[in-house]
Amino acid sequence: MFKTLAGVLQHIGHQVVDGVLRLGYATRFFLYALKMSGESFRRFPLVIREIYFTGVLSLIIILVSALFVGMVLGLQGYNTLQRYGSSEAVGVLVALALVRELGPVVTALLFAGRAGTAITAEIGLMKATEQLSAMEMMAVNPISRVVAPRFWAGVISMPFLAALFSMMGVFGGYLVAVQLIGVDNGAFWSQMQSSVDWSDDIMNGVIKSCVFGVACTIIALFEGYDAPPTAEGVSRATTRTVVISSLAVLGLDFVLTAFMLH
Amino acid sequence: MSTPLKNNIVEIENLSFGYSNRLLHQDISMRFPAGKVVAIMGGSGSGKTTLLRLIGGQLKPQSGCVKVDGKVVHEQDGDGIYLMRRKMGMLFQFGALFTDLSVFDNVAFPMRENTNLPEVIIRDLVLLKLNAVGLRGARDLMPAELSGGMARRVALARAVALDPQIIMYDEPFAGLDPISMGIIANLIRRLNDALGATSIVVTHDVHEAFLFVDYVYFVSAGKVVAEGSPQELSQSAMPFVHQFVHGEADGPVPFHYAAPDYAQDMLGAGRV
Image 1 (cartoon, chains in turn brown, purple):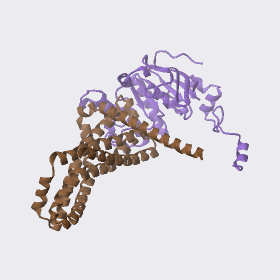
Image 2 (cartoon, rainbow over the protein chains, first blue to last red):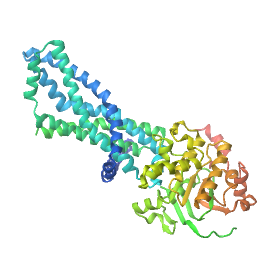
Image 3 (tube, each protein chain N blue to C red):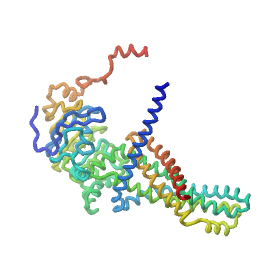
Image 4 (cartoon, one colour):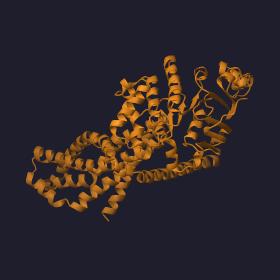
């Protein structure tokens, strides 16, 4: 009995210590990537190439998802608001929900699934096929040549993707509420314009998406760089990227929202 | 046993290295003289590749040291290591070509990263290197389109892109057909002599290596068990060398992994 209990405690302790150690490694990795970022800015085409792979190629999934999310918000919002006779406010509901929460959060979750996994798998395979070692032996630091450009590409892409998500979502809401259901066009837009605040709503959304950009990209990079150089190691790392990124985004969203709403 | 080597560009002195509680190398010493092609041979898992990583400064020894051009590798700081690596070229076991770059860009990579040469000169140099390995015509192919032997040759062109003083080869013959093997062996010798470099070849392919190397170290169980020229070692009566050179299944290197007594093991199995 005691033996089993001790075993369980030992296992939990081991997991916690292991987790803290990894967090420490990840933090050092993050700081080192920041330190080695000079090259990324001196040779900006390296970052632009990665923006194409992480940002531009994620556009389709982001925009299509945003359209559907906006359309669903329009339907649900109208359905609830018309009970209180304020169906014109559906524009405000759609815009605030997207700009404050759904834009940054859903974009980050989709980014983790689309671009984060690609980054982890690519770096993990580069490690497994000794490409990173080869780079080191050619006197080229893989952190400054491979990791830092991808990091900045992710950080730069995320706010733009989130902004496009919100924009497309609002358009989806407009299609359903105004074009399909027949809510007044002028009321839809004017109420939205008067209720959405630049700093409280839009800028807070931008801050969130920047924070999520840092978190998702560094998690993807770290998991790839730290992956055991085997097929199983890379596959586990890719799964961990999605799981940890998603949890980190949702947890950070709560913390940031709490601060933003005082 | 053999004539002492002089004018060494790489020296390994009393080096010990291991992972966690297993010591991979114990008190190993080796010399690599300038201009020569030296092979390090030994069975799989004898830590040959690790030796190359120690020379390249990717690992730190537990005791002893590796000296490159008289400087102790593990005492160099980050910049010092990178400066040292610019004198080295390394061919990895399966080439380690960058899969997102074409053959041309792979060979150009070290030049673009480590020099300020204009693109016109880089183009000429890359074509020169690719011509030396016979793949000038394959410059626009991607690594996925190359055969194993071709990939190894491109990697070789990339390893010598900056005319290194020291070229290290990690199992250059692994998984190659006899024609490709001969081509690679010939290239290693020719490039070494043309560049006036020193080559360190890690391999277990005795017959291929004995044809073109100048000196051989045999490593087993973390120690240098024999050294000498290929001629000396071919005639060696040492049991390990004999087993290795003639490819015998059993000998000083046992066929069986350490296990309890066979009879006991079989009888004990039913009682578990």
